Image (cartoon, rainbow, N blue to C red; front, side, top):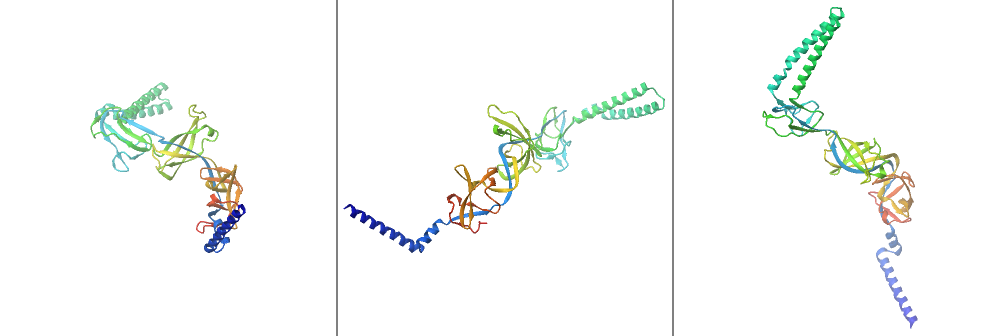
Length: 364
């Protein structure tokens, strides 16, 4: 009875196998062609080329203007805006401005008269002429040293008086202390008298921005003054702005175990604006003319880093060693050579000896 059951099972299994082989022959022509179609894995490859790679540290932070000034009136007077020579209109929010340009006037005729600038100017001219005269006479023996010294003191007093009068007049003007852009002008009616110490202009320098980043303690020996930095705005990721490390704190924050580094950003094209939250890539190392591959194609097995290359239509697993690396790329110091054909897509299911089919539109 038991032997009969075994015989029946063998007959059934044989019939099933015959049915499977028949179906394979019907649809694929032969069992061999079916096996071949299964193991031929589609992949995309590219030839290894020598390239450049940078190793960098990523940080984030907010950019700020390197120069900022809130300007106040230094004298009471009648409010009047200066004229922007580039627009021929009164200065307004958003206008660029050059150092020493007059943005606001506080006209005060009464104070101008009390300053007596013309009087002090005339006194200075007379004192200078008298001094030159006394000096000439002294050289010829016509006056004593005491008389020459007296004339010099008179000239110096006249110079101080005139300079002081000029300073008082300058207080009737609000001028730009640096090249920048007007980010705010509080509204005041033209020709209305305003008081001393009133805020009238807010300036920022957009050409040079600064940024502070906090970095983990493990990078304290890596980050150095002078290292180049790339700045990227999250809203426009393709934009790049150059920067540099200017200061590195030698001490750690005991609460966060981080240290502070300061950057200066060259923003001559105004791609960034103060207050933006940005990403910084601090470049710590760079190599040129080395083998560089996409980091995503590297497979790690038992602490071994490998990639797949294609040789005569078959995949071959190649062990590699890594040098510099960043989030996207890695330098290969051993295991690959220029012009090797590496698999960049379809590598997930490959094994050494897998038969592959290279995509014609992407393969190199």
